[in-house]
Image (cartoon, rainbow, N blue to C red; front, side, top):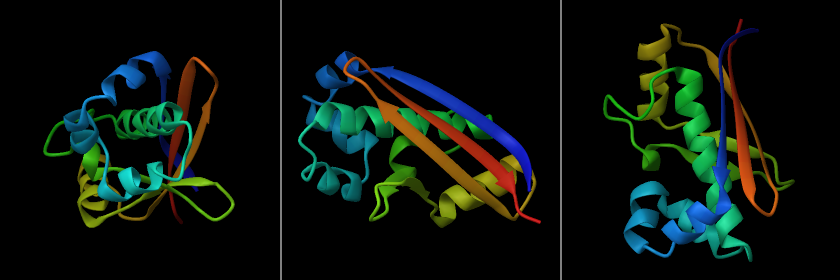
Amino acid sequence: MKTVGIGVDIVDNKRINSLIKNKKFISRTFSKNEILNSRKNQNKTNYFSKRFAAKESLVKAIGSGFRDGINFRDIQIFNNKFGKPSYLINSKIRNFIKKKMNFNNFELFLSISDEKDYSIAFTLIQTKK
């Protein structure tokens, strides 16, 4: 495997705490599944902060930012049964990465963490052999 993109983002949880009070922000930024899964989490601020940071770190790893038709809701984060975070790669994101990075076979790796004041996400994009 070859690393072709890395991205990192850190978020001030206080900023997200004030933003998630606005339902329009939530619906513009997070997928229906992410919103549904937030109901299982007691700390909504950190839950949404980590996902916000993960979405930002992915577009940084791609090197595109949020443009060319990609928005926050296109990127979805989920956790497996052990809590490991991952990206849900839909066809829009797959095609966007293929177009921007000029390769077809890739894997995305995600690590997210939080503390009282900050949440951070790190994304790695690697080509498959």
